[in-house]
Image (tube, rainbow, N blue to C red; front, side, top):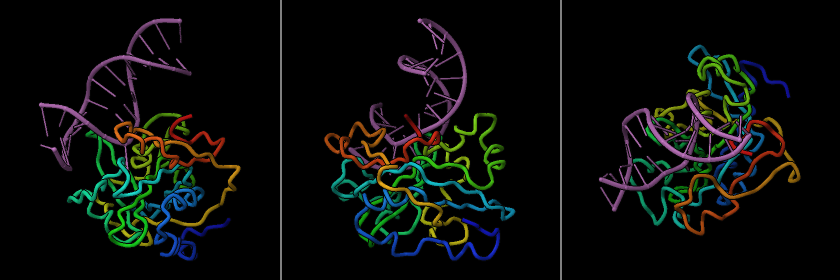
Length: 208
DNA sequence: CGCAGGATGGGCT
DNA sequence: GCCCATCCTGCGG
């Protein structure tokens, strides 16, 4: 699919309705193949195709920051309308990018766990330092470094000018795997829920 | 290749 | 004071 650096790419931004659905598991699956675009300060396209996601289902999900209706300054944007970025800081070093879904007061999100570099790979290499390309964006913390996403992106509209999602390609169900989410062993039986999705066969996912 | 351990700081009890 | 939706390094095989 041809994308011009300026101009027509705006026509490919995902519509509001994509994010406003209440079935967050379905949105997590549908996000595979979409492009996350974050222009650098000079306006160069830096982008990656989503290859791994996880759904977090809000108040009833022990793994979610909003479990039990918990509402704090940190997770406030997850209670907002779908189509915003929720970016949080963890392990003293890393940021994680999430997509807020559904209507307001429905604090569901999709964590972006891995992307495949598409545009601006040289810029990503500079930001990440010397390493194999397959390691540039193969994890939720890594991709935030490669795309220069930090706390300033929290609450950003995903159809704005600082960050947006575009259609890029699609995957059929037999190209997609489903499994349990990673790094949430504290969540009891919710740790077993099959709410992680990834593209089969890509070297850019966070784990084999 | 796999695995153990450390880095590092904000959020919440 | 403990936990955390991670990553990297160094070591052994």
